[in-house]
Length: 393
Image (cartoon, rainbow, N blue to C red; front, side, top):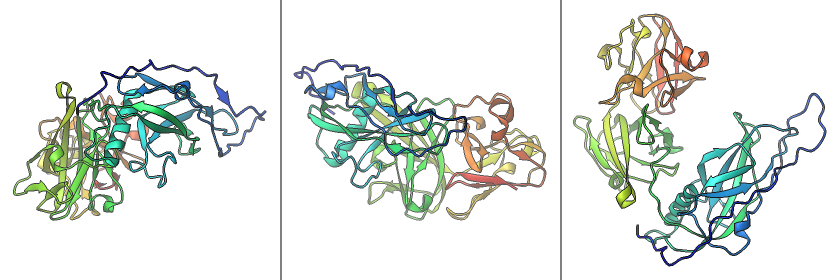
């Protein structure tokens, strides 16, 4: 994308440090009660008040300060930054349509937000609303709010007020994706996207997952929950025998045969051309157990210990009966990678991917007993790969 910033003179970002404010100023007794907050305030940064034009592409950080939500007493709070081009912030309140939640999170009420992360979110939303029109050099307003919740909890979610930063310019800056999501009519009944895992050791370069698609059905993928990329946005290699993939009517990747498939999506940064190149490798879906439950066999890709796929998206994969006792070790097989790089366990009934976790001995000793699943002879592993859930019984 061509940029046009050379003739624009912009001031440096003013880093505003405002005192930390809290609405939790009341006295509390020894047994405080958790309150559900009704409001908390995001301050307008000084750069938004002086008529300055802020170059998000070239800037480093945007400083935001806020009061902590009033939970009745001080609590560790996680803040997420949400960006919109809509002055009402979101008429529909649908992420990826009217606003974008940035990936980075913060745990202090004075936060320096990555300006390029905001930049790329604004660029993507602008292109969605103005197909084929370059946003580079366009002076526009953006709108910001925070979403807060109690750290490591599903409690206390609340949105702040919305502030306006009236004059910003943007330009596309290619960066490797932090997440990849899949969407399709056969994926979670078409009601939600499916997040891919990262291959262990990947640095936002290699993502993988398993999915079901109906005959002549299709999938889309993307770096956000919109999952709006398709066949032409990647080099697509189909390695499933007798299966042909092509471009679907909606631009997605169409499969001429129904079934379970594994996708390995590689992202590489082309700095010279300011773009990210993607390769989507499609394989037959294969998952295995290994180690103690497999009679202490550690052969990678051993057909004797392969899980049997479900007949459709709603049916589970089922392992052979366990031949030994000990800790569950299981994985999806990606050709060219050792089994442990795509390993998973079960945590509270959900698939928990190894990704960057250091598992040198086993899940119990290296990550914690709650991540370790005990196996006994005769039991089996049941996995719902559509919803990434499972159990041993």
